[in-house]
Image (cartoon, rainbow, N blue to C red; front, side, top):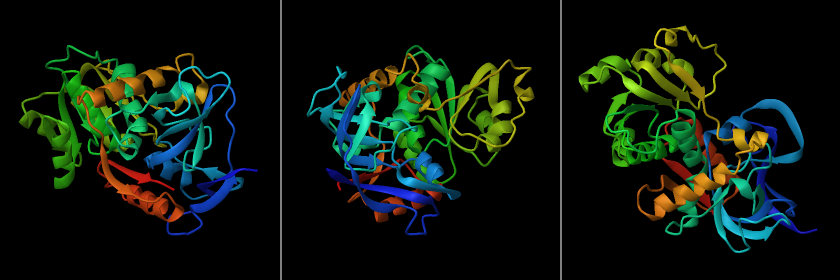
Amino acid sequence: MTTMKAVGLFRYLPTTDSESLIDLEIKKPKPEGRDLLVRVQAISVNPVDTKVRKPKERVEEIPKILGWDVAGVVEETGPECSLFSIGDPVYYAGSITRQGANSEYHLVDEQIVGHKPQTLSFAEAAALPLTSLTAWEALFDRLNIPEKGNEGTKLLIIGAAGGVGSIAIQLAKWAGMTVIGTSSRKESSHWVKERGADYVINHYEEFVPQLKQLGFDNVDYILCLNRTEMHWENMALAIKPQGKICSIYETDEKLNLYPLFNKSVTFVWELMFTRPMFGTPDMIKQHQILNRIAEMIDSHIIETTLNEVISPINAENLRKAHAKLEEGKTIGKIVLEGF
């Protein structure tokens, strides 16, 4: 049996416990159907990793592998593959319903894989897939913002300094929008402005008075990337009549939709994993989006949001990365490179 290195878990524990993520030797998988076998070069961490890993009673018989941001090289192709060849550099986020990519080799359906941007290193590319897909789908699929012709249209991005916000700012500016990002610290505000936001407000203060100071009564669209229930009232007040709100942040609290009623406001969720999770007929759109993002990167329209590289990929370093994410102050993306 051919084996490979991986980082995974059997028990769901806090990062302070050395058993929360452990170094493993597991069987190297074989691609079937439309699967690619990818030799992993770099991975990125996302809040979803910490949410899956967070303490709970369940114990796994087969180790659970996390990781949903990858850049690597196609090692083998399944018999039904047609989009990629052996040796192709690729990047992708994968599916939450399958094993993650914190391993030397990883299986992924080619329909949700993109060709890696040619001008980026593997580490720079690994910072992009999950956040780029989330930002693109939120703006252009869920909020139905046109890709062009949005001059004078205002977008408020809550939690703009994180991975998704860092890409969403750039995509919205490319689409011609006026972008207002929120942050609460000097360094995160600086990062948001560097990514191209026109204005920055504080998400711990009321939105409308801050918007009025900028000369705006309301905004056309809101993209919420942090604590939906915490910002709900502020969003309802700041959105214009017939405006649209999208959130990527799930909540256990019941949301009162009534404040949106008089304004006929649309509220919609975005989960990047929906297409691969349900095998939707348009699942291949993620392949297309990632290829669009790669073209925009190589044309210098947008840039990677990588902010820190840790090496090598092992349990100790992944525990450190998870702990940083759980502090809730991460700016841009953390990437791990090389086994």
